[in-house]
Length: 465
Image: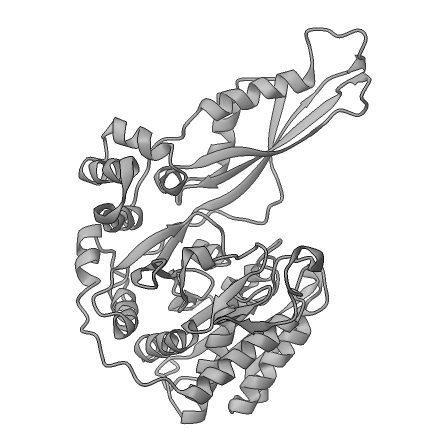
């Protein structure tokens, strides 16, 4: 299938090209099945390091086998070097000449301590319209939805034109070693649909606001900035002090702003947000999309946390460690500088720019083993945009469907880096105030399940023809 890049304007026009089909009535039994799958999934403490990812994967494999998948088409593969496992399930299509669609999600979760939570984070609780537990959103919600939908389609005898492959990684929240395997396992994939990105936003009164399809993500990079010194007794201070030296270096970095950048994805996203944006930042946003060279508007947006990440590469000091005794001059001081790099910008060029900005021959800047790699943006394919719009508009006719760039990192970076178009298309709609991913008392709205089931089924029926 040819890949065609759309301009931001033509992409925006394509967003509303699909008429909204009638949405089927919710299937109560399917809803209950998805909810039970999510509840059971939360009960597996899939924190890395840990030993619960493989049992969770075996549980999901069992569900797929019950739905009719052949045993040799669903594999749980341990990945010893990562201390975890992956799950690969293949739904065979009718035309072997067609390239497969790969669905990616992850089974692991970030740590959660019982003493910090209101409820046990690994004992699922349904209360006041929410399901509580670690992973309720990130990422066991979409895992549960996708497994449920694939099972439904298998039981109904659906025959896609191309293979549909489910690939669940086991360490997305840490080193992401398992997702690195996917491009080699599926080098001929037509596209990747990522359930760990994208999704819909609801206003605080429950009204739908927009749906974001993630078509790019910034590169995550940690850099260690280190200053060393012979040190000495604190009673004999001199002009050379590693703490002061590194403080001056970080002050210079804090004052620096990387160049403003844009692509068709960020401009489409900002243009969609501009009409309803409030306050001085909203006015600045409207000025910026009208004239991307408006320096005053750029300055205002650059001071707003909601927009600065969409405009440029950002680097910020996040940790500092140094000194060895309270009564000694420091011999070594190291700061961690975390950067979120605009797609298409090599991380090495950012490291070199940090060195240039700090202008300190006595400081070393090295890339830490953060597990991330550079990845480009994915093209806004008309077939993907049409399928996502159709799925969204079945629930919410006319709702804006907007390409977005994620400031965070997902497993999609590896498939994008391998040249496979990758799109974040989660079926979850929720309010910003309900998003506690990685935080305390994570929860997902139970009412979101039915729409998410319909969303994924619509996508697969349209894109896997």
